[in-house]
Image (cartoon, rainbow, N blue to C red):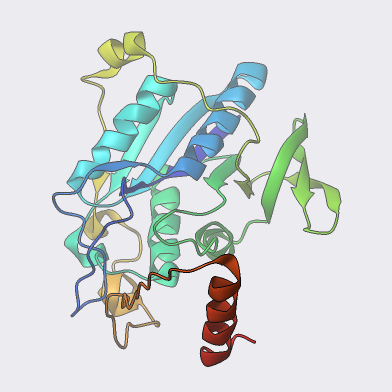
Length: 262
């Protein structure tokens, strides 16, 4: 079983500034971590590898420092890692990101199963996985909560349909996006850290892709653009009321009426 897991480095805090001109996150100088949902995707692949054999490759897109999450994946048991890093990829929306990663998958070559986390904590769109599958022209299943059976030519999974659960069998090659808690992610191994600290991470850019059309990547390839961006306003007001319970109750009623809540 040849598997590719898509992982991403995301901000480790919710206090992130946004460039008012480009509308993209300012990632320089902030703490980062592996996207939490991707930990579940990686654990799913490692569980399948332990049961059926094969290999687990990880693929990430981002600036050079994104190598850190690939190193973390090595410490958890991943066999190979590739980073898509090029200034021409910067500012990509969901569509351009999906296309870029699909080109990275093509560069990787043969695979049976692509596993993605449900979504990223810095975007929360849950669209990249399915859109990648469309670009790769392979079947895909989202919201996977359990791996029911792993067959020679297909995989049987359980998916969350909000109001019901559905069991689906899909043939390889295919893509799935997994929900949190499908498996409990293992901790990185210190022994593997020592063993893989010099392990190669292949870094490729636009020049390495089959499709080198710059209009399909980054801001140039993003049909959605930020029109205006601004920090949220904080207009908190505080009042201190004194008196007995009846007086305070009357003041509360008057205030609610004034604010048109009642």
